[in-house]
Each structure stands twice: as structure tokens, then as C-alpha cells.
Image (tube, rainbow, N blue to C red):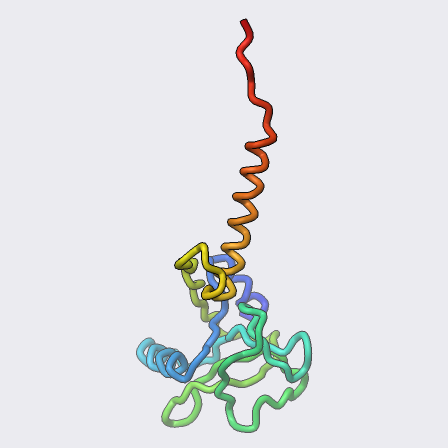
Length: 159
């Protein structure tokens, strides 16, 4: 599939295109690909579609935190905007390359992380950003529920 079809496919099954965030993840994926004998290119979620040379994760909307470029890449040869992973060399090392989004490679999906459980819901100071937003949303919901409960007219039985 091309990059766009791959992205849509992964979303349709409840996941996202692969987002490699560390050398350890890259090595684990490389080992897995060798075990299942896949030596073809596969799409990652990385691209510079919005701004040339600024590679972002389509999944997180943030700059990529890890890349292991194939030598002399990214090169944007013929307007290449999407990042593919490929096994290179005799040692079959997984490396990244910018390529044309219209090329057809494997869609390699990952499932989204499970919803985070926030500890200490009353403390916003030590929460991470997602927990803070969750706690603020819950506080607004509770306040709205209390407001609605206080403003509802109570029904009086009639004799």
C-alpha cells in the first residue's frame, strides 16, 4: 500500500503506523522482521509533508524522537516526504529512508498504548500533561453536574 493507504489501514484496525522511538525498539523490530523473513520496505508514521525537512510523527503530531537514517539521507530526491524502514546490507540492519509517499510497501501497524491511569487525581502538580488534561476535564464535568443538580426544580407531590 502507499503511505496514505497504510495509514488509513492501520487506523481502521485500531492502530497507527509504526513509530520507532528508540534504538531498542528499532533493534527489536529488526529482530522480529528477520524472524518472520520480511526483507522489504515498510512504512513508518514519520513524514515531512507539512514542512520540508521537519520530520514529524503523524501519530503524535510531534517531531520524531528517533531516526536511524540510511547513509546520505534524508535526501528529498524527487520530493520524498514519507519515511520507510528497510533492511540494508549483508548484516540486514534496519534503517530509515525518505521516499515518495505513493510507493507501495508494507503497512506495519502498532496498537495504541492503553489509556493511562492517573494516580493522585486531586494533585495536578505531579501529573503528566495527559493526566492534567484528564483531571481538568473531570473537574469541569463534576462542576457542571453539581450546577445542574442545584438548578433543577424539585417535583412536589400534589394532593
